[in-house]
Length: 129
Image (cartoon, rainbow, N blue to C red; front, top):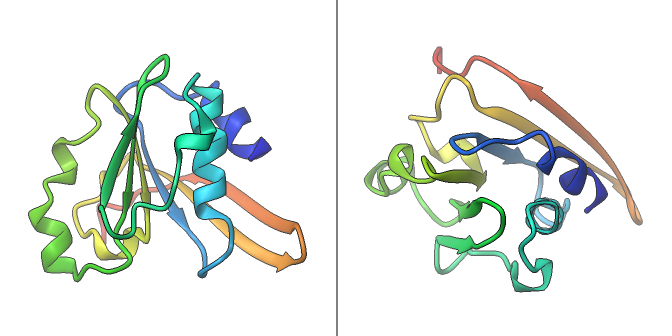
């Protein structure tokens, strides 16, 4: 959660975060940290696997999408490229979203066992997908 809290201080409305990692790596925990850093209640954050998209009110609205159960065609129908323009959009399982913006921030979480995680945060050009 600490990495998410720290990153939240650097984010602005319109930012898109692509959060990658295996099941159980801590993607939703990272979003809890983002929520807390943005002034939302981290206890309200849960994995939106079945609801697909949730939002949390803070200093800026945090939109949280989980595409795990979707195909690329299903994800395309969500209109995510228009979601979060007034806030921050955090997307778990972004490999299902072919229209991710070129300016997205990529967060890769690697589970090292126990409570240890390796978290890499980069901006990368996704327009060549």
